[in-house]
Image 1 (tube, rainbow, N blue to C red):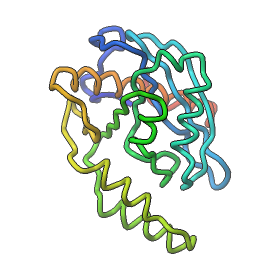
Image 2: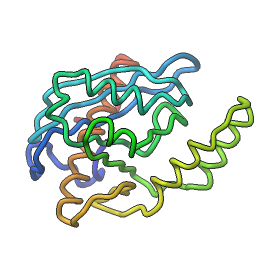
Image 3: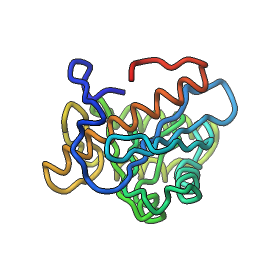
Image 4: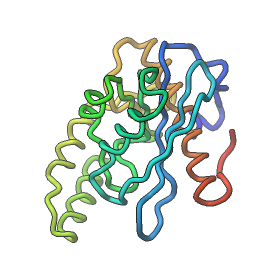
Length: 198
């Protein structure tokens, strides 16, 4: 995942904001079963580690699984930021960002390449709930809370609150690089070959 296709930022040139960051991404979704989720631990433009877990496709376990993955790792006391591509993983498995922040004592940064279509996402979640006969009201509430005020930053869309324009730009650039690397690793493990460039 690149910040911009024609403006790639090298990891070793990114400005520093203290603390390690974990970029989160999931592997391509298979027809059934749990989906691989990868966390890349980045600090100072260097990859310090890789974490993995599995989450249910269109499930509700993403928040707990991400929190457990990070808290049980040797990086748990070093991580200050968690970076997400959007607000859901493995399809419609919506991450409760506020709960994740409280459990880990970190700041979550949610970014995406394009401004989310809130109504389309809501419709997809409602349709899934109707098809499965389950209550999806909590997912819809999380969607509204996260997508309240999207902010364009460095060619990306920021979906969570970050104070200060300079700090916001630094963290979004770091998040984009960490998530991009997580995507490459997750894709490479599941497909035997990654797509995109490092």
